[in-house]
Image (cartoon, rainbow, N blue to C red; front, side, top):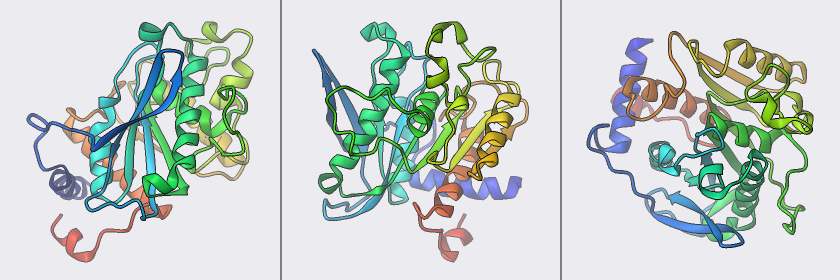
Length: 288
């Protein structure tokens, strides 16, 4: 396994082109996907080399972590650049948070659904396949991606809900799954947790999901992720759970190089299995 991850590290490093210490990630373009009052929210987009609007590539949008309170879309720029190098249109979204916008987690989920809907509505201009739109995120960002894939309601008023806000796949890094009694920050969700908690809203439309979690995560218990996986499988839905021994919350971030490389390699394999990415050629595998 160590040999495999070392090999994949070389491919990932080649795709990114720099070490974790000196790499600067820059989106190809940033576009406004939603305006609420005086607040404009952007998608920061990384395109594959030679990408054209006439293409129909798979897409992914990531949502940063920060407890619905803070955070930056730059957290997932490395993931975006990697996936763009593999052929996807990869985006990292801004969304409203309490420290900047005075909002609650409800607005965070609304913004996630708006972002997915906007991507589909603008598929022709973006050069993407509207039936291959994945969503991902870390911690609270994982929560709002999972909420888009599970909950009904929490849609922004005035949007065209005939365009689906449900992603076609989920890539979740130590996500907040459970807002119910005993779950993370349950007291924040009094009165609406039953409709809001991904754990309690898994349904036949919930997309195939991959989950990454450290066994020493102080915020998200392993038992919570295992229960989520079990509930998915009860409905004959796919949920790949990858546990990382001794790792803590946020273990997957880019500057934690070994963890980042391992989780990106698994993310790649998951997306290949769904047809979002092409399998690496024998030549690429040889040079890993």
